[in-house]
Image (cartoon, one colour):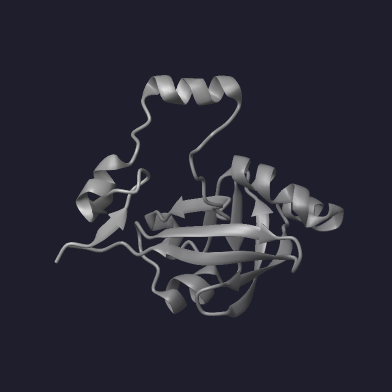
Length: 163
């Protein structure tokens, strides 16, 4: 059974015809939009300021999650508040709350700067996330700092599937 839609000119169109009529934007069309300062491209909001595909060292006995320096310095430290930002930027670290959006549970970890300049989350990372959530190498996680609740929000974005 074919479903018909009324087209722009009032003509009946099948689903196939309607999809075929969708406009393809050429390079010239995109350049014209850029020149006029407009865009017809729909961009959805992505809250995940820190995305990471887990490495072996993130899920083994090292008991820490390595976070990139740039992501933390750009998307987290400016939102923490002076005291906590200062603590987290030291090798001693500061206590942060991580809210697991998937399981609706709250956990306390320590975020600190590593000697390489990167940041790590320690103190029960393996127990509270790797073991509890069954995280494995190649899983993708996402995190962002929620300034309204003063905590990280965490989610398992993609579970690695072995064939």
